[in-house]
Length: 247
Image (cartoon, rainbow, N blue to C red):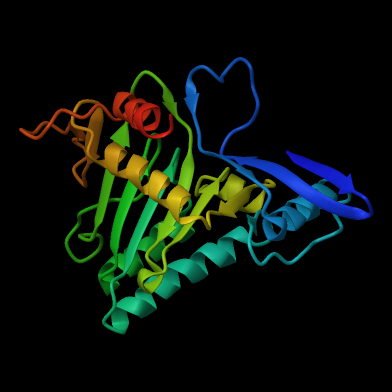
């Protein structure tokens, strides 16, 4: 959503970016991340996306957004390669991806490469996942968990350690060929530290669910995570987190 407002002769943008859409039939059961912003650098690029939707011969370059079908694949591969390079330099390499589905073998192979290079990878995948985790010599640095509960986990988030200058994107795109190469999808960077922390906190809650979370393993046993730690049902605890911290 993009709003143009004129004050005198000066135009200013206000916008709303989300991992899901406005849909009255799903709003009560889908969970998404959304961003209200007046960041002009981001919103000028949002304007380019709408321009492309009106005239799809207008293919733009983007410095902030990651946009399918022309940019997402190369940009995400570049971000993963950067984590691999940082590990080779002796720095920490870490990737977190929260997705609905993961079926692109291009990215499966790239994450295998990253894992073998020493990059620590955490995947929070609600649905289909074509990657085989925790396999010696291939993916022992990759952990995959899946939460299925009362609400539909619908948000997509990409997190890259980036040598301590963490990059976080919220996105409409799963790592599926149709999303990356055949649809218009947008990933939006999160620049504010407080918003980054909110997203990381919710990912932490999701990762530590020990009620509705399954650990996906290479044997396809996919057993519920049961431990003696404090009970965390991530969807309820996420609601409590925002209720208690954003009043």
